[in-house]
Amino acid sequence: MFSLSLLHVQFLNLHCAYNLWINFLYHDLEYVVGVSNSSPTSTKPKNEVVKSEDKMKERSTNTDEKEKPRESSHYSDADSSSKPTPELKENEDGVILSPSSKVCNYAKGRWVEDNRRPWYSGFGCKQWLSIMWACRLTKRKDFSYEGYRWQPENCYMPEFERSSFLRRDLNTILISRMQNKTLAFIGDSLGRQQFQSLMCMLTGGEESPEVEDVGREYGLAKAPGALRPDGWVYRFPNTNTTILYYWSASLSDLVPLNRTDPSTDIAMHLDQPPAFMRKFFHQFHVLVLNTGHHWNRGKLKANRWVMYVDGKPAEEKKPLDMGNAKNLTVYSIARWIDSQLPLHPHNLKVFFRTISPRHFFNGDWNTGGSCDNMIPMSGGSEVVQDGSSDIVVESALKGTKVKILDITAISQLRDEGHVSRYTRRAILNTSDCLHWCLPGIPDTWNELLIAQI
Image 1 (cartoon, rainbow, N blue to C red):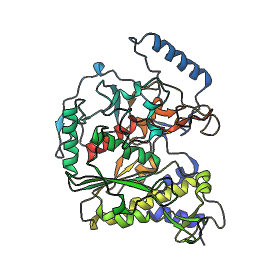
Image 2: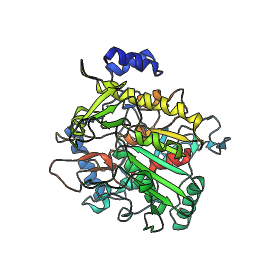
Image 3: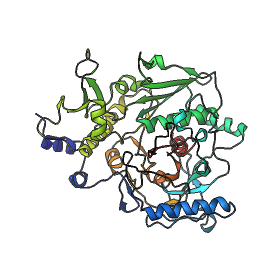
Image 4: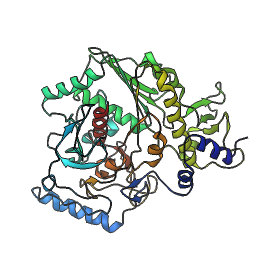
């Protein structure tokens, strides 16, 4: 029988130090920004919301006056003119670094304005972009969130060029790196956003009839009666480059307890990777994983997921803490991948993307929470910390060859970039402060990914 004590033993066996385990039990570690542990659900005082609205009105009446971000104890605003540009040099991997850097920390740096953004139109990219995330097609009026790029502190990231010629040239650079290769995203709806963002970036948001839908090769055709398939797979035939997304919100193996009963509960094996990933793992050349926002009782109940460990129900004697369950899964999948990499035929590169922050103020998604701020970087523009804000993922990857794609702290600064109240359904008093507008912040996640491929 499974017990919490057995979970402790397994967790420790998965290369987790005792002190970190204590932190998991008593602290929320998902959103550490700078030196502070902050809740994933923000609670902005009403007076601050009023101030933000006043600032927006002032900004709309004087477009020449740039809004000054409010001060933050965890982020410092940086004017590019106030800092000397460091002397840069190239390392053995071709990454340009400052003289004091041996490894590029892409997550440490600042947001800067860039009038060459975005890289595709929010009115276009209809071939790839879900309409619920196309904020240009909603009643939203302010799109200033599109006009920023991320600048790492001690290294140079190759940038997109706005002209269509150079954009095609950039696509050629990425595609040539991925010629005859497959890039796979496996994760939740935020992973799907990153997948759609990359498809829009690679095509410039233009109709691309030459791109082939090869989902059937991976068993991802839409089932009868289903709203959508479990994933999508597209191939650029000129370079034989395949871009794939598979929905696995928990990164756990999901097995129906009774395959003949559509209403049966589903065993959620915390210590086993998804069957889809195990089946096609050997075909991937780049793999990007993520999980995070489905680890709550509401999601488990809605999906009829029942947690299992070692092939047995995990909660027969007592409820299992959801944070511990998530941590076990993250550690398990990182260790499984690390054990498989020496056997992989394609020198696979695996990235675990850190959690994307939520920005619900004055409530949660179902209690009137909102994210009405439209002023970019109103909480600061710079990340000064060295470590990741997602300590669970950062710790789980230590000692493995799985790389971290660290986007949490840089995204924490961009609360104005969410879909907000401008949802497709526009339900009264409901805001989407989890998903991002596209074009938008996930484009930067892909730039960070491309820089590390």
